[in-house]
Length: 400
Image: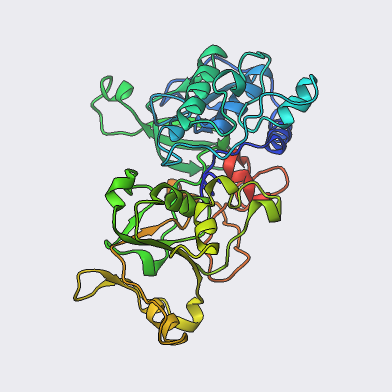
């Protein structure tokens, strides 16, 4: 699930920063190279970093501090643009603890889950928000300042359409308004680099086949105004932070909300993993346990098949799995139909960036019915089948 997207992406814990130091050490084998290369230049750069989110920014800082030849390619006009939209209801689940029992900066950073490392003590999240769980716009503002004040070499408005691994380099086909005005030729603009670092996060919604229906609204596009759910019954598919975030936002407006899961709920206070469901998002659990009509329903796809939603005669949405569950319960069981069905089933790595035969191997999921989510990587965060392709940021969770 995202941020805990979550698998989505807002928790940037300190152990990931240590991993990035290790990644830099494995990459930094060359000396300072020539100046920044324009697209279509014959000379490949040493390092290309794709993505100017927290992982890409931290890598850029380390590379710049070490005097390496690098460029960051970012499709949006600003750094950290992901957090201008996500999480959808704008409250992070990453801790911004501004005061601790010690004055040791290292100890304080251990309890600051948002700040990146730098030599500038003013570039810390505590100067951008006083909230324990900040608004996402504050984090995006922080990332913009981090990139600007540290003069990181970021090429904005640059969309990477294709990555072609070659024996001695990577060829990145890109587009952007800065080159469209320079050349009307149809040939794609290119960056070439000896090592490639992908910090693109988990950017593709994971949509199981039975939920690939126009009747099901995705977390990435659902209306965030709780008034739009007033008086409606709602089913939410998925049981991560994104699902509980949706349920919390509409609490007090709906007639009832049912969260459906095949694997139960992993609570962070039980697992000690910050990406699992946090208490700040768990209003529905409280309502469910206190019997206020909302429910948490676990089902088994192998028992009931993978069937899709359909619209009944009443105009409301029905799901055969719900009927199968009701058939196993006493006659007085309330078997609902739904006005809205929302999908919050997580995200996965976008392999479509590699259109050729050489595509990063994917990590096999622990459970057979789960979709492949992360690229497969070795302990240095290098792809297991494409040399000099490394992963940073949220993709590093593959080794958790």
